[in-house]
Image (spheres, rainbow, N blue to C red):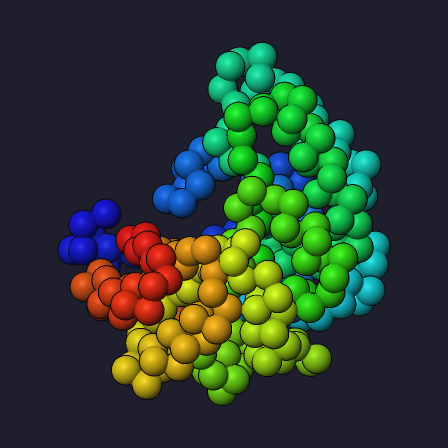
Amino acid sequence: MAASARREFARETIALQQGVIYGPVMSRRLGRSLGLNLLPDEIKLCSLNCRYCQYGWTGMLAALEGKADGFFPSRGEVKEKLARTLAKMAAAKKPPDTITFSGNGEATLHPEFPGIVADVIELRDRYAPGCKTAILSNSTTIGRKSLREAILKLDEPILKLDAGTAGTFKKLNGPAPGVSFQRILDGLRLIGPRIIIQSLFVNGGVDNTSPDEVGAWVKAVVSVAPREVQIYTLDRGPADASLKPVPLKRLETIAAQLRKTGVKARVFA
């Protein structure tokens, strides 16, 4: 998208996804992406309350899945609905490019997440063997061994890191009690070379694009040593209307600063 058009982003947040399967949608990063929503339809359930979220403010802020027992679709329901969808897409010879764990919050909060990952891979292999699997995760559960192992079974494990300091993380990402920046960083460092970091930059009520903020972020990313970093800005209306998208030129400058360290960085705008 051209830089001039990039500034004309949607001002409104979007509605929560309804149901387990949504799309496929065209993704700048993942191509024709079939979404998997393991979270409730009626409320956004997440371990962060990010100011920039396209789904608005978090309705149920939780760091552990136990708080939301009874809200989740069952593992069996997820498998049945995905199987039905992939079978139809295979019959039409229009398989997705990617099956992506995303939706109304943080997918890894689902109590059966590791088992669901195994089911998704099984169904992918059966109906769409050329398709990749992916997750867009906020990194808050990466300290748990079972969840790390499940995430790493996916082809594109994309995990969030928007800040280089605990203070900016708290202001921008609004963590649930018990979620700490340092624990996230420690968890990412355990698996860095196998993951993709996604980082969103904003101006306005919170600004993570200043030289000091970017310098701290670069230092944190280098300590993780991911296989790639994906840099982007607002595309849809944020929960906090004071936030503004970052010009493409600034995003490219941030990427160039990271590339000087030897870390691969791509800008999606």
